[in-house]
Image 1 (spheres, helix red, strand yellow):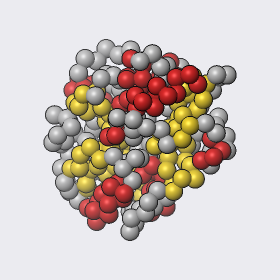
Image 2 (cartoon, rainbow, N blue to C red):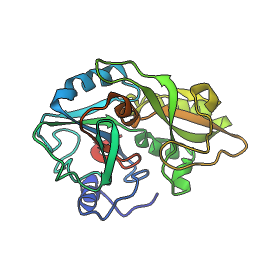
Image 3 (cartoon, rainbow, N blue to C red):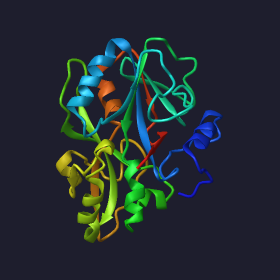
Length: 256
């Protein structure tokens, strides 16, 4: 995706002013993107335990202390209440609304987690000549709830969500080699090949994002996804949970 942005700060300013509310795949390719999970302090310690037990779908990049809304290490001049293109708000495990800012929802007891995102390694794939098909088609990446169970903490438990990219069969080994070092952004794939083996019954009907066709000669490749906490929220039912809307990431100042 071609954009006119030269710095993450410039992009975040447009997000803050609701000039960009679309998915962030391909935005300022050389910079790391982050999933966002915001929870009341009473849930935060156990959620951090959950993330550490499940670092593949939930690699922590930064945690803001209760009430803090300005990032400290992954970005400068950033406000988590306004700098995500689209947020989801859950109450007691149910999606309540989507919104372009959370100024009205903000509370002094809220703790923010930034988790690595697979959008971050797409630039490396493209640089190696591997097509990122959802970008080519102008779509959001397809994401699926699987039958792979994450490791439970005291409160949080549930299935892993994965993102899928169709990769030409002859480029799969290269694709794995490229993404494996990105350990803070989900790293190597968790499955290659048959969707049914991980509980996906219809590859054309993703649970999140857009459907992307798989052509002859292409193989579906699946990576752990930072939308996993949203599936977990449906089961753990925290009284409040705020996340990015799938595909609408926080763009950091961190270079790949």
